[in-house]
Length: 199
Ligand code: ITT
Image 1: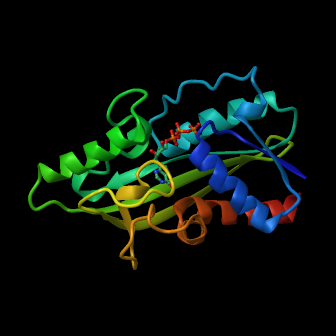
Image 2: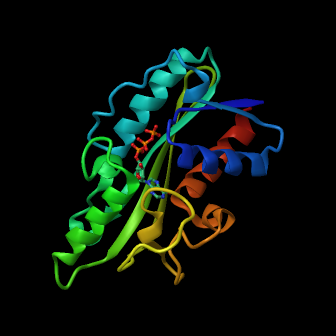
Image 3: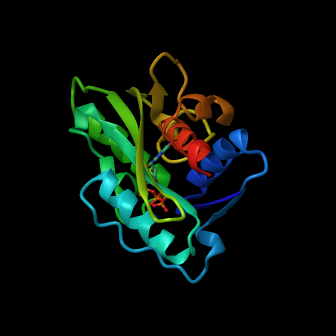
């Protein structure tokens, strides 16, 4: 049993692999780094869905009829009109580091008073079965933006996001705790239902 994962983001990859391995301990996973000849196309879609399709479909075309999944995800802050959204990876500029993107969110909220700090992570997951049929799944995690960065686990905006019902940021939770509630975990568990019924 194998699944190809269309991502170059190591934080995402680690989470997706461990979520899949929980259900399928013997599963083999591969990602972009296992196919050096593949260059991902530019993510120039206008929605999470379009971008998820762009990366996943092009990777599927290079994998020779395997199960392929990929996802586009990001942080949507209510008080910033849903930004950074699809621009999450490059909010502070192309090739911005996590700390630069995270600092920009805090700074933009500090410019507003009172700021609405409610926010959500969204994950739109695209899957292709070996016949090339497309499936779409979504996961949303509601929460709020912390006043400062806290914690060192995870990646991206984890250190400023406090999930609903918690006092800690995602970066202060263990990877296992994040994987019980995350937007990505929700989307992957919907994918697993499909995979169970087809593979
Ligand atoms: P791939 O396209 O190769 O998968 P990417 O990093 O470019 O990797 P996206 O375009 O989907 O991925 O951007 C998602 C960004 O949203 C990511 O770089 C993080 O900054 C943020 N993000 C998504 N999920 C997150 C999570 O669980 N925790 C923290 N930040 C997250």
